[in-house]
Image 1 (tube, rainbow, N blue to C red):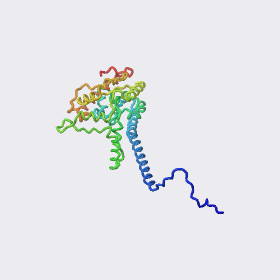
Image 2 (cartoon, rainbow, N blue to C red):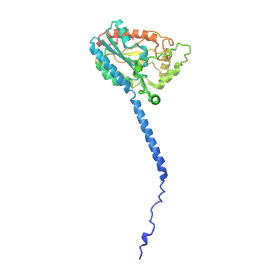
Image 3 (cartoon, rainbow, N blue to C red):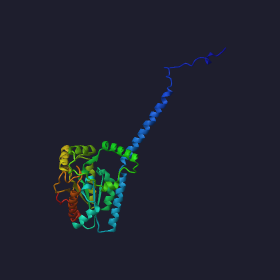
Image 4 (cartoon, helix red, strand yellow):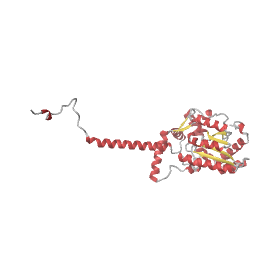
Length: 322
């Protein structure tokens, strides 16, 4: 008797299994590989964007160290540190020239360290603050806008990718020149007949770049730094850097407030330039002072610094005219 079970078809239970589609495996694997590569490139570029300012930090830590060495070599020297955005760079002469101006006002041996970013937010300077406090400058000057400004990633991340592509295409070793950032002052004069700038468009672009508002989270961080500096015996003052009147009016209208109304910090005065400026003659563009106006502003600022340093540190500088 033969066993017929050996020749019988195996019994299948449940619905029939679909045929294997091996021909789909390769495209799916390729698509997944592409997605992984895109994700990795995106993650790497975002990481690079977040750490793009490392060169800025290293460069300026070296500048702080160099100033510390100069102060150590000359115990009678006095240091002033100024932090801000590119309008601060255009409004002030460089370190040696500011020292000469201060000497005329009775403050010999003044060393001014101006650190700017473009555009700046207070977070840019936070990696430097501990070293600045250890430096023990007599005075720290802060661009008033640092209280209110934070960069918008939606604007600057695409701009970073564009610069990165340009860097690769042209074989440039870095994203920007850190020395030029601190000292370069190109000036396309607005008093030329072919100037066709629009202050409304400038304000619109500024607000697209910066989250500029009175209740910015930056305010508390600036306040805390000012308190730490004062506790170390360091005076602090805010600089309300001049802007063209057409820009100031439109900016206040867009923000529905004057930033001066919110710039009060304990024992920290806001220094306002007392001279009236001409929108076209005294500015290179809608943000930066022209050379002639810079010379006058720097002379005034040197006088303000001398007046502040002439008072005992315990009195701070809050009695100076606003």
